Length: 213
Length: 184
Image (cartoon, rainbow over all chains, first blue to last red; front, side):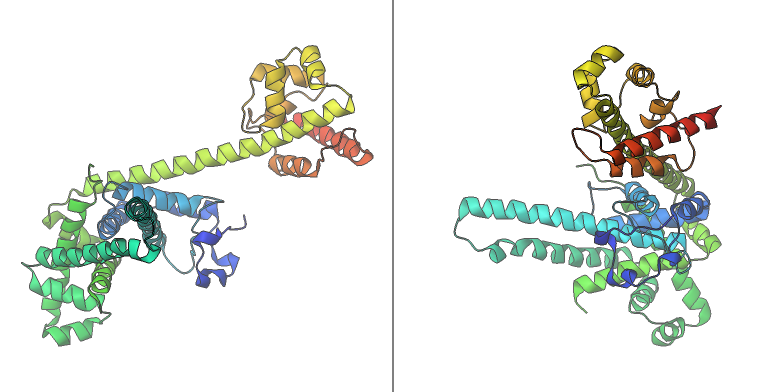
């Protein structure tokens, strides 16, 4: 079956990819059916992290996010995200698809908020210009990101080495660069990594549920 | 790096750490953190099962609609071939006129089995041919849906059948006959 890419889901890079690199619906289905318990543990943790990062709240639970990512991977037409099976694992592909799905959910919520703001502004001031009306939504997004960063710092307050490890990892530093910068030996590095894993797992399951409105 | 970029980078690093973690090491970390791993697996498997089911339902619905487009075109062509109005077919085939109209106009509409069987008999069509076109039977050859789609796409709305349309109709009815032979 020839893979189909819906234009709205297709990045510029993907447009240059030969169709033969994409899994067919049947291949994707077989890969989904072969997912192990360990894969599901990882997928649910990353789904929860996406949910928390995007502040999906009552919009979408981690489980719903994963389900939607699988639907988009398997769908023969419509809003699809085809899996490049030769390039990334199915687990990694689902992570990226969840990133895309949650991004769209945020964009949609933002659009709706802007619309509400515009309508409210029209009620108050029919002469107001559009850019001024839309200012507060982006500001809110930035404030939420800052708030999230503070929450992460707080979460890792009892594990400074693990947080330092995570920040350097986020900055793209390699293992040797991290150990050199933090003055760690191999054993301390492993301990920091494991501590980070524990904190992230705890953080994810505490926040992956859909918040009741 | 701005604070929102820093936040995004941290989240990315967190996901990457989970995805690249050794399964045993991550399992131990989750156990130490008091995470209910069995609940995570149940939730993940439930999400996958729901997705698989949703995709299957979507597939069934879209395929059934495509087939019923073929049904609609076939009925219109047969009626024009026999120079019968919709009311005349409804009366002679003993089916509801409104339903016949709906079958011809709305491929999303799922017709009643009795109506389909009556029409099949009235137009002397191969047994179960309209049943398959109405999406009521899954017993069909792999090329059935594609053939029906091509047939539906070739039809034009004209008052009388052209020679090409008559040929197209005869060919398609012959195909339905061969398809009926597959069942037996």
